[in-house]
Amino acid sequence: MGFPPLTTVAHQWMATHLSPGQQVVDATAGNGHDTVFLAQQVGTSGHVTAFDVQAPACAATRRRLASANVSDRVTVVHAGHETMRNHVEAPIHAAMFNLGYLPRHDHTRITHPDTTVAALNAACALMTEGGLITVLAYRGHDGGPEEAQRVHDWIDARVDTLRILQSRTYSAGPDAPLLWGIQVPAA
Ligand SMILES: C[S@@+](CC[C@H](N)C(=O)[O-])C[C@H]1O[C@@H](n2cnc3c(N)ncnc32)[C@H](O)[C@@H]1O
Image (tube, rainbow, N blue to C red; front, top):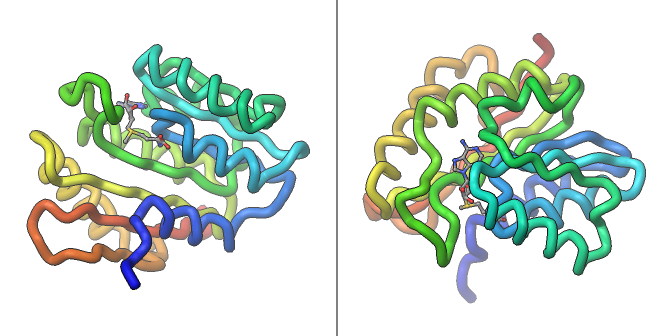
């Protein structure tokens, strides 16, 4: 039996954490898979704010939300996740980061370490006690290893203030993706 993809593992972690009525963030909307998943978890009384810098990603996410009949509880923001605090009010209960490029589009339009770290700091500032952040970082594209290292360093510098739930990868290779679950305690 094979291992589930890390995108599925991130959903499993989130599913055990989230409840209907909560406010959450999808930091990288992409094709909208995570946005739809989050919208289903928080239900009609919850809210998801989803960010992406690319118009085709925002359009794809809106289409996927409409197909799943969950558009009513989602705001898709065509802006970088580093502007999160301009668009979302505290408290949020979770934030998902699925880094890298938009599949089947321009592979040079990637997330970048400085803006990723700025968005992680913003998510922490908005997060309720015990809130969960998942970060899935890919290392097979140009810039991917450096970004994963920055996320690792960001976590490492906060081990006293954040609770690192799990990180796992199913291959030991240097290109293997990495998944972190980060629980944010009270400020
Ligand atoms: C791997 S994809 C996300 C996949 C998505 N979560 C899904 O379920 O389909 C990464 C996305 O991050 C977006 N991105 C890049 N820089 C960003 C930024 N500063 N803020 C928000 N999104 C960004 C890219 O445009 C791309 O669509």
